[in-house]
Length: 612
Image 1: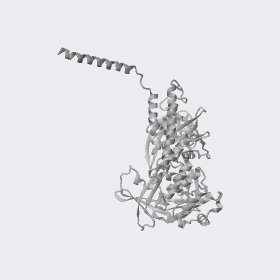
Image 2: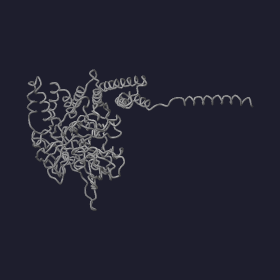
Image 3: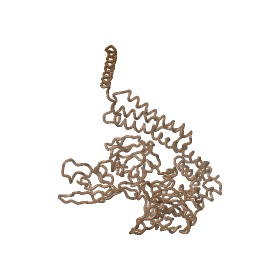
Image 4: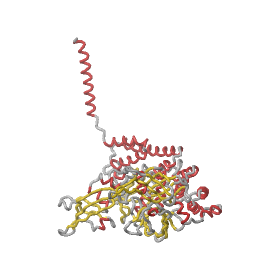
């Protein structure tokens, strides 16, 4: 019995010694560093998401490479691997674009072309953005999808002028589908070309004609959204939303406001909702309609109904009006269909939406006008009515037609329009577009972009605009891009040094600054939201916990009388959402001289338009 147990005992001791040795060896093995984990993450992304891999390589360089405070050049093998990873990621971007072109996924191919261009890689052998956009336009035209075809043709022309034959192709189609203003656009770019005399006279005569208001009102419909019954003072009354819409394609596509149809697509709305359009008066039949796509940030929506319209508005031949120009607003105020009111453009550049700015008009508009077109005297689209101030007649606003043209491709794709997001809050200073705040957990924060830096170029091009219009111009550069693309920013840092950052765009949150407010500290988040940058003061009383570092000119804080070096105390800080915007409610206490104390309440739009 003893002889049988002995071999097992020896074997057990041998295995135990092996395990002890391996454990000892494991103890001697150095732990994996954070840098190694980062390199592993980059390696995993190189094949599946090369744009993200390049973004992560930029972060690695900022943390440990040549751009860090203490560059780590101790391991040449690591440096060589990083170079190889960047080359492989760039090559995979090119291969992905080649595959997208072979499969005729023109939108993806175009997006990849922009990412390659931001890296300085010329994709001449595969295709650059203007050629790819034009190919997409021709494909859509051949499939009878005129709206995306015309929009893409205009974008292609803006990137690189169309040839005479290509412009003639779209001119013929515009005349065929009876879209006079679209035909006028393509005619205008052909007349200055060599061969302009060869334009067929019948096409020229049609494009040079003029549509009357009587024609245009045929392309406007009333939108009715039924939301059941609501109780007011113990009485049940119909809960209906009334708006206007106008046709932008002969297949029955119409443009209206998001706030008119929000109950159709808003997941937070739990009640009954049914949408209809009406082409005549209240006795006309209600025709069911559905939402195709929407852009909440721009308060726009694309809807569809089974109607062949008598008139289609052009979203191609739009115009940026001058102040004082005469305009018409067409819609269904309080349900009075086919109403045309006349007024002038009162002001441009009003900052009332999350992205860009809007037009102020004095044409009479009321409930029901929302979503209706605003046109100039020649019938060119100027904007879309979206808001008014009830207690102040004559203060009405329209989303510019150029914003609609930029937003439409994403809405045509269907569903919620995804917008790109860097995570920056900006103000226009004497130095340019200054970064006032970097929201946490955003692409800009990942690359440690510093507050106080000034944006000099986007993808190598300087952005120039009149005073007060610089930030909307920057937003217009980013607006057409897609989440996931690469963009290169050149920044002038606070100490005067210039640095480049290649960043992968994220998807813009529903209410960006509300999202930041939940993840950042009070003293950081409050500053850019109402135009005030604060610093924490060490020591002193609880009253003077913060010092005012900077007051943005023209901001709410500036209007309230706050100035630099004021000691302030923030007593209340609330975030709540209303009508798609988050509002900031801050109770601020300041002391000017001696023992004089004043208190003020500063409500402000939390989702400031000055974001990128």
